[in-house]
Image 1 (cartoon, rainbow, N blue to C red):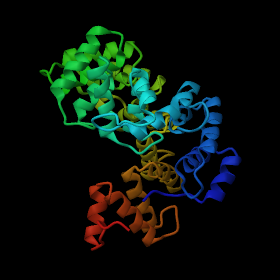
Image 2 (cartoon, rainbow, N blue to C red):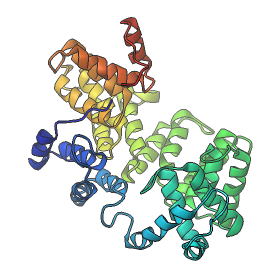
Image 3 (tube, one colour):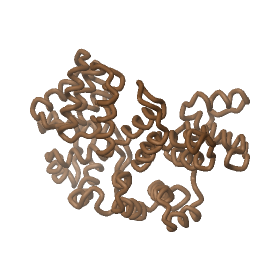
Image 4 (cartoon, rainbow, N blue to C red):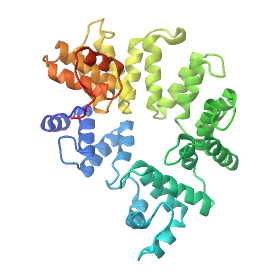
Length: 383
């Protein structure tokens, strides 16, 4: 269960200028929560927020698939052709049909194949079908001599095919050797050296590749570099460097870096002085980037009285727990359930508490499972 806000109140709050409500409303329109799904309205809301400087809203635009301009006019121009390909493409062969000539023409363009493969893998504009997506990438590799990083990642993780780390590593290494400026290839190759995927563990090599990846524009690598310095993976623990790279990642819009920066200052990791105000600042930065862990963690600061001179603030805690629960974060569902169970910040409502505990339990949260089982409440059966 995800929380669905009353649409009329949400619209009113959004029109009054509340940014959090505008974000909520954008997602309500995007996914059809308590309102008719409307991708144009969703796109308009996120576009306006992006123009105001909210970097998280810019990322949210990528989810508005059919809204104007999101994937570009070039893609829209060939999308009808891609839809026809879908109708005639089979796992093993292209069937004879009135579209066969056009289909064969398009399927010999790697760019069209890649777009269609990504549509299948991500469920953009058609039902998600990972096997079909991988088949297209395999077609490009075998018939067109064209290899993409995502093809190698499908092999690494077993997406749409049998997991084959050795083959995934082989192709990543080949892409990397052919083009050292491919930051994405460097990043996943580094993961191979960490996880022993097709090669021996080599943390020093992994760190070098992460840095190369970041230098060539693959921003997520800043997070991994920070993690290696924080935990001393292949290097001495160095919190100054960890914070430096987390900050670079956050500046580049990597929300995971905001989570870790907040945790470092909330918990006082490896000798860093505890500073709740800094933790709050970084969690807020992560919330702007749409990170549900930052929403939950900030709610936890208010819930436990770690801000405002030790006074527990259930109103603000619930606000951020709701934001995270809306995005499927189970700890927030559980803590909202506790608020309803105990009447903290909301009117006591045991049924709503149970509903939230069930939602968290179905996400695998042990604390929610325990409280339900202790009260002999069946949570396994879907409604």
